[in-house]
Structure formats: C-alpha cells, structure tokens
Amino acid sequence: MKRKALLNKTLKSFAKVFKDNGFSCFLVGGALRNFYAGLEPSDFDFATDATPEEVVSMFRHVIPTGIKHGTVTVLYSGGQYEVTTFRIESTYSNARHPDSVSYSNSIFEDLKRRDFTINAIALDMNTGELIDPHNGINDIGIKLIRAIGDPLERFREDGLRIMRACRFTSQLNFRIEQETLSAMKKSCETLRNVSMERIRDEIIRILSTEKPSIAFKIMEHSSITKLILPELMVCRGVMQKGFHDFDVLDHLYYSCDGADRNNLVVRLAALFHDIGKPPARGLDESGIYTFYNHEDVSAASAEKILKRFKFPNNTITRTVHLIKHHMFNYTPEWSDAAVRRFIARVGIDSLDDLFALRAADQYGMKNKSVDSLALFEFRKRINSILEKESALSIKDLDINGSILQKKLNITPGPIIGTILQELFESVLDDPDLNSRDKLLEIAENFYKQQFGTR
Image (cartoon, rainbow, N blue to C red):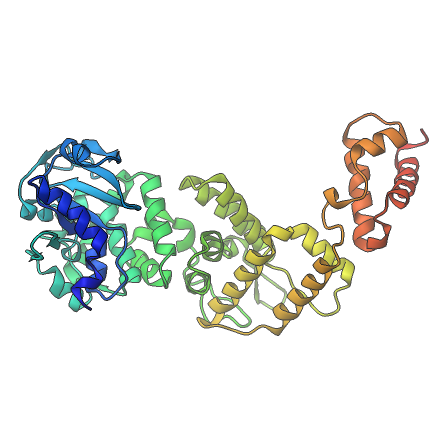
C-alpha cells in the first residue's frame, strides 16, 4: 500500500497549518494502525506540541471536546480531526483516568503512555518520518496485540484497556500476546472502576466488527464475561436439541456473527435472544430438556442488561421486542387471518429486523448461513398481505373513538378501547369489514351484548 493512499491533500493542508505556526503535527492512533494492517484508515487523530489554546487560535472552528486532558476537535475542510497535545500522565489511582496530565514537547513521551504497541506509532506529517519506538509495525505485521511495558501496569491504569484488547482481536483479527493475555485475566477486576457507559461503548464497537464471537470468546477466557455479563456465562454447557450443533453460549456468539454488523439492535437481539434458556430449562416426560417460554425470560433478562449498561430507551425497547417475538413457527397452513394477526402483533416497522434476527438465529445453529424456504415463503405471504393495504393496526380502522362516542352516546373511557379492539379483531378476520357502516353495526351489537342497552 502506497503512502499517498494515507496522506491526501486535505490532511497535508491541515498539517501545514501547524508547520506554518511553528508546531509539529503527527498522525497517530487507529487510522495509522489500520493503514499498516491493510485496512481502510478512518478517524484521523493527531498529536502536537501545540497547547489546546494554541490549536484553537490556529483554526476557525474548534470544539473543546476534552480540553482539560489536552484534546480538541478541529473542523477543517469538511472533516473532523481530534488533536491532542503531547502528554505525560501521572498515576491512575482510580484505574480510570490519570490523576494529572502535564504537557510535553516530545512525541516519544506521548507514545509511552499509550496502551498497545500497535497504537504507539506516529507519522510526522511534515517530514514523513515514521516514529515507532515500541516496534508496533512489527507487531502489526505478525498480527499481535502486545501491551507497552508491563501489561499489568497498563491494565491497572485503565481497566477499559482490557476490553479494548478484546475488541481489537475481532476488529483486526489479531491474537493477544501471552503475557498480555495473562495480565488481562489477573487485572479484570479493574473493570469494576470503569463506568457502564464506557464499557457499553466498547461492547457496541465489538458488535460492529465482522465476527464479534472472536472478542466474546477472549472476554470469556479472561473472566471479563463473568464479571460484566454473568447472565451469559450461565449459558455455557447448556446443550440444545434439534438442529443445534452448539451449547447455548456458542449459539449466541455465532448468531451474533450471523447478524448484520451495521444493525446494532439485531446484533444485540442475536446476542441475548436465548439468554433465558438456562432458567427456563425443564424436562419433559421423555427426559428431554425443554425451554418453554424462554423468549419471555430472555426478553426480561435482556432488558435488565441493557438498562444496566444504560443503552438508549429506544434501543432497549426495539431489542426486547425482537427477542420476545423471535419464536414464531410459521407453516403453510396458517390462514391469512393468522398472518395478519402476526403482522399486527409484531408491527410492520419491526418485520425486517425480526426476520433478520431469525436468519441470524439459524446461522448460529451451524455457524454458517442456512437457506430457509419456510422463512422465504412466510415473507412472501406477508408482503402479499401488505400490498393489499389491510388494516393492520387500530389506527387503520375506518372509524375512531370520537365517532364511537357520538354514535353510541357514551363517554370517553376504557369501554371505547375495548370496542376498538373488538373491531380490530373483526377486521383481522375479514378485511372487507373495514368500512364505517359495517364497523358501526358491529360496535352497536358488541356494546349491547357486553355493556347492556344504551
């Protein structure tokens, strides 16, 4: 890969601003690491001997994203670039943040404070010189994640580095150096000092990699899963019947792999969709394990986990909804009314994600893609019904609560909701009933039968 593929005109122009003002500018971080790993560089970060205040004075648009730690974000020529002043960090008494930060004029001092050798390389934007004091380029070449210096010290400085190491295994398809891996297990308790939000963000990054199972298995090996996701660990060794080749935990890992990496909700649902199987497990008369209603137990457990990690409410609601409804068992014998009820129960907006989850679930049974004729046929029937524009929610009825109040001479209250639900059930059975006159006739008869004459 040629160097010019990394340094475009905009980046060179950006660096020239520093040079013209008498400061150095180094490209650092993930973009440089990914470039040498043969991946597409992105998220360009820079280190400089200019102070944050001096960086602010050089550019028109600067956001003080982490100015107390020496970091600002510069908006330049349509891009956003994080710029950090060379730093020397003190001790980490809380295993989260350095007790104090002081500025340095040395890129070598700055690189010493980083986590792994693969992240401790820098490119001088003015001279083109590559700075690699910890042999990070060599470790990238052999696909190795190695802590800088004493790994125990690095992880005790910031427990999140343990999660980052796991993430890099699946993001880069690298292995972890043995001493570093051993230190991860010895230091995993430092994660208790890391905020749930920071751990959540690393989980999200893991879920965006091609094969999250790689990272999750390292997390399990390093006792991280036991610490932060104990609900997953009880799935280890719980075997399943039927087409499953794996226990519940490996099935969840591989289901996650089988989901779209760009769809966080489906990947979360894939990771947790069977998490309720261990507590729901029972034995039938033949001595075979069953998991009746595990979808409800899984949904409740997933909701607690996602709340614990402070995921947005919308993400929680959508994920739990998918898990709760993932156990549909379609057969060609289903009537059109049954299909309409399924659509109404799941919701039109959730259909694509639910089918994606079901495909991921099937992937996780064998750790490979599986063609499902039943799913294909079911989706065809759903699409056919959707094309007919049937009433698939109460708001699609050709009548509303206000009309019912006026025609039936009743006051607002729960009775109106009960009548609307009855009308909706009728229309699900027979869409031709969705006209105002027919609905009013049904409503009057139902009201008389259930609540007496007016």
